Amino acid sequence: MVRSCGRRRFLGARPRRTGSGAAPRRADVAARDRRGAAGPADRRRADGTEPPGPPGRRHRARRPGGRRRGPGQPLRRRARPADAGGGAVTSAPQRTAGSGSAPVRGRQTLPWHADPYSDALRAGRGPLFLRRSDGGLLPLDVERWCAEPDAADRTVLARCRGTVLDIGCGPGRLVRALTRAGHRTLGIDVSPAAVTRTVRAGGRAREQSVFDPVPDEGGWDTGLLIDGNIGIGGDPRALLDRAARILSPSGALMVETALAAGDSDLDERFQARVDDGRGTAGAAFTWARLSCHALNRYGRTTGWTAAEHWTEAGRHFVVLRRGSGGGDGVEVGGSTGTGIDVGGG
Ligand SMILES: C[S@@+](CC[C@H](N)C(=O)[O-])C[C@H]1O[C@@H](n2cnc3c(N)ncnc32)[C@H](O)[C@@H]1O
Image (cartoon, rainbow, N blue to C red; front, side, top):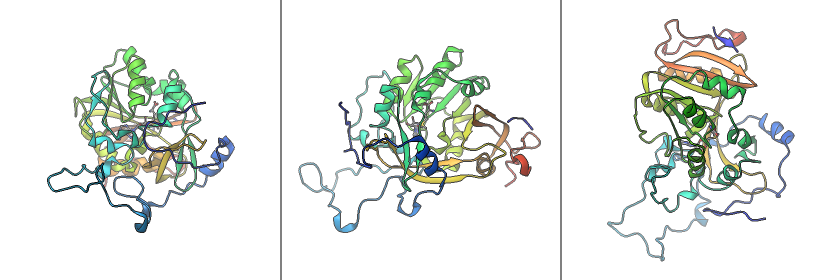
């Protein structure tokens, strides 16, 4: 067992007024977060967006100019379920920063694309939260994401081998550090602001969803799902399946979990919006949070084995490898002694 254990720019969708305008205090955030319950899943659509209002208030879909869509006019492609939570970008062409291709109209209304996330990344600071549909707030640590890697990040960086794909790279502190260290590294993110920031910092990044084909698909030595990114898409099983196709068969996937191996269980998915705590929120998407235990369960059904887990500076990490355990798996059950036996069913 290994256990060291004045003027705001609105880019797209009209911002939703969600509060009185005062930024919530951290204590309030923690108290609300402790409630833990996921949002009302029955209101969720397959693509992770919130359903429209009551039928009586719905307007008929009209083309710009007021005319209805006629035969022969293409319907907009629907996002796949696995794309929920940012993956809706699949309807837009992929773009590598610096390629010069024009942004697609309407993408600002997609999750993570517009303010307040973009504003916070540009400014390099929060406050910023995930506002759950049940009212809970989860702080997003923008300042840390925009800073140099900290002690916990460095434990991740030290374990990276070969080529590295940072999935949901944000402003790219890990991409930059890995590039400097000589790893061939690519960050992917659906947020144009995140990609821009990563590239400006000297990293390579691509504006795309993890659920769309990536360069060197199936060949990456290391994949990163850090800062809660196991929540991407709100369907950890789908994300782990996808990671298995992206990484090489001998590749390692490093996942940050919400709770440590010895902690209690947590497996929740919920509707959320990125929210600045001052009344501005982005589009809704589905997100997930997992304990180490829950990651173990999802790993079991997707062919991943936990090879190592550790805690550093209050953050918790697991290294997953392909395979059925066979003695390579490590105990992640803490005091309960529940070991990872991935592949056993
Ligand atoms: C919790 S933040 C993580 C920040 C990041 N790890 C960092 O170091 O700053 C989640 C990130 O995942 C991105 N994201 C969300 N859905 C995604 C998807 N389907 N594919 C790729 N990135 C996605 C968001 O744009 C956001 O930058």
